[in-house]
Image (tube, rainbow, N blue to C red; front, side):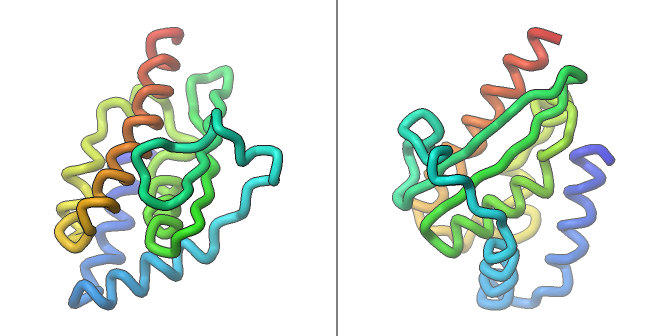
Length: 141
């Protein structure tokens, strides 16, 4: 499944959510289902800078240019944003990730406009980390 196909599935879910409170509740529920990282994976190297809350992100590449993304946060909303990013990107080809406009997607599903400036900066920082690894994988492949 491509990133765009995954985005379409997520977008269809959000179409049924009438207001920002319902969207937030859905995002929080998604985040609660995230698997935690092992304590030794929560390091300065995996910490995402630019987030107001604590965020750790572990990205690994497979030989065929796909990325596996695992992440954790100490904030409920951010955990939900992580869940969306994992659904969008984990297992996708690096070239597919690099060509997808995630900020436009978050606007499309009505999430961006309800995020605080700090949460928006955190989301941008997480996307920057993912896109940086994807660009490197694409260049190598």
